[in-house]
Each structure stands twice: as structure tokens, then as C-alpha cells.
Length: 220
Image (cartoon, rainbow, N blue to C red; front, top):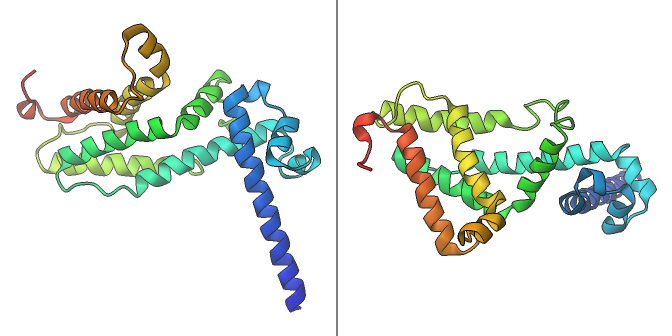
């Protein structure tokens, strides 16, 4: 019985490693070639397995892409949920700004994968429950920050956490997703540390002005 259990555990470990290798290879292939350009053959080759094994884990390429995308979302949401913020709600909001911009800078694959899904009009995520994407974790984080700021008399009452997040995310997103064309057209390269910090200062200022009560707004 012990030997059988060991063999079963060993099989599960090998299966898990194979699945992880397929997912890691698939992410790189989808980032490099999009959903249309990536193939199960190229993913299998990059993962070092045969194509039949890829199909054994994922019946269709779209299901593999869906799993890669869900994992990318969950990685970000889990990190957001584990952030430790300052007691000062304004400083905490600035820390969320900093985390978001730097996460996008350090994880460009996430932006590409989401961009690919938007090219396909969200059809691969449409069947995924929001719970699986851990959206509630993000909402709790932002709601908690806003509630703390409102209690402290710093933030405007009734701010919508989704609206604030969309504003923050879009500022950070374009700053990174449009980095190369912005560098060509304006000579601003956000991949340079000094430029990244300058851009972050602008984002923080915009988000502060969005959230602060009118009497707390600094002069322009």
C-alpha cells in the first residue's frame, strides 16, 4: 500500500510539473505570437513535451489561453491582497499607485495577455467566474482604503472603488503599454528609473486630486 501511494504521489508530482511547464511555455508563446499565432505544436516544443500531452491537459488552445490568463490575473490580485499599507490613507493610496505602476513595468506579459484577450472581445474570459479571477480581493483592498480615508475626513464620501481603480489602472497601463511609441514621439522613456518616478509622481497627484475632499486639495 505504501509503494502504491508513493507511485501515485510521484505520478501526481510529474503531472503537476508537466502542467506547469506547459503553462509557462504557453504564456511566452501567447505573448510572442498572440492567440491566433501560437500553436499547440509550438507550445509543446517550448515546454519540452509532445503535443499529445498538451492536448491531454488542455483540449483546445483557447482553454489553455484561458488558464494562462486566469493565472496572470490571480497573481496580481493575490499580490494586491497582501500589500501592507501605511496608516495614513493618503500615503496608502499613493502606495497603491506605486505598486500598480511598478507591477506593470515588471510584468509586461500581463499587459500583453490582457491586450490579446481584448482583441478577441473577451470571449475566453466570459465563461470564467469573477470569483476565479479574485476580483473581490481587489475590490476589498480599494474599498478599505477609501473607507479609511473617508473616516479620517481626507477622502470625498461615496467614491466608487471600481471607478477609482479604473482611473488608476488606466494611467499606469497606458504609461507602460504605450512606452515605446511615447519614447519615439515625446522622448520620454518610462523604462528609465528617473522617468518612471517622474511619471509616478504625476499619477499620484491625479489620484490624490480624484480622492481628496475639496478643502484638502493642494494648490495647482
